Each structure stands twice: as C-alpha cells, then as structure tokens.
Length: 69
Image (cartoon, rainbow, N blue to C red; front, side, top):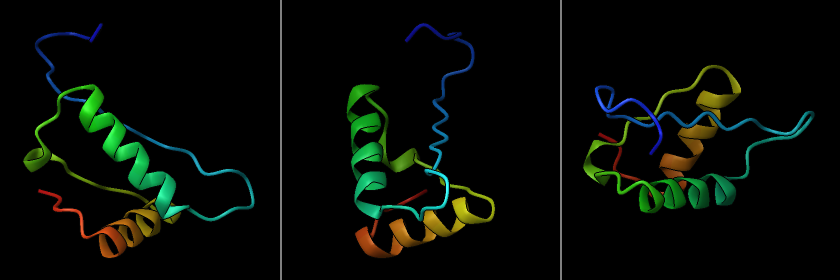
C-alpha cells in the first residue's frame, strides 16, 4: 500500500452505473478481491451506505451472508 502507515484501513466506495441497480455478484467479487489483494482481516470488515449504496450493501449481506463486523 502506498498510503499512510498510521491510518491502517482501506475504504472502498463503488459507484453504480447511471440508471442502474447494484449487481450483488459484482459487489461480492469486488469485496473478495479487495480482501485478498490487501490482506484484510475478514473479521474486521464494516459496511455502510447511503440511499442506493445502503440498499446494495443490504442486498449483498442478505444474498451472500457476509459476516460483516
């Protein structure tokens, strides 16, 4: 990572295409890739979202049963 070592976290903010809905398959693949690529502890993954982002996160958690912290 090229970031600051005193701020040991990763923030991922995906953007949906205009006039589309979230693809839970794409979100699941993105989450898996980020966890693997950056050696993130899967027990310390938090999710948040506003409006459509909250909807996408909720669908992801329900469909793939991710264990968010």
